[in-house]
Image 1 (tube, rainbow, N blue to C red):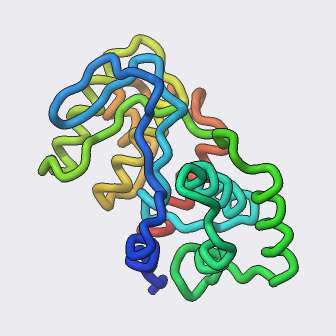
Image 2 (image 1 turned 180 degrees about the vertical axis):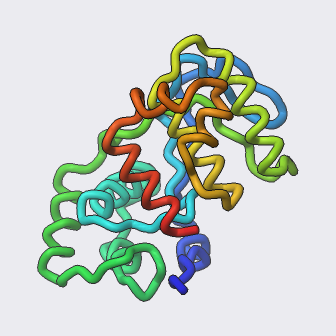
Image 3 (image 1 turned 90 degrees about the vertical axis):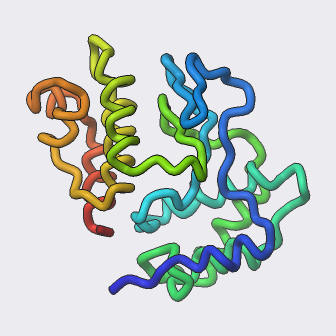
Length: 204
């Protein structure tokens, strides 16, 4: 059984690891969600899914996001990044040498500050609104499924919500949510999403 993330450590130190869009305006906003018809790159929700960090590249991206989100309140001390990179704390699946980790942290300190590259999101559910996973899935299907063309960001949204429900991500389930054929999903999904699909399923 994998180690649970020690989120309490981050929360006790008021580390910011989530932020909704601040410049992009939603096409529709209700008490339960924000819907961006053209999508937004400004949604940073670290550690939302159960999937852990499995590569150096992903670890560095998480570091850049943390640097970016917390820069207005001052630079995060080095030990915050060291804590996340320590396998015993439940955030990563691998061990990293002190030399490699220090080089990664130095790079973030030198080059961080700009918005890190991010995935496009269309639906952002608001916290603590009491929606069940099934209700969220129904909303996703209605909002995204009405689009005439399926995009990778639509598939990614469905993957995240299936994972939140604790259900295995399959092409058939994604196709059912988006009201399209499995062939359409196979034709649209890229290698990055295929890899993320495997990671999300692995952590169930």
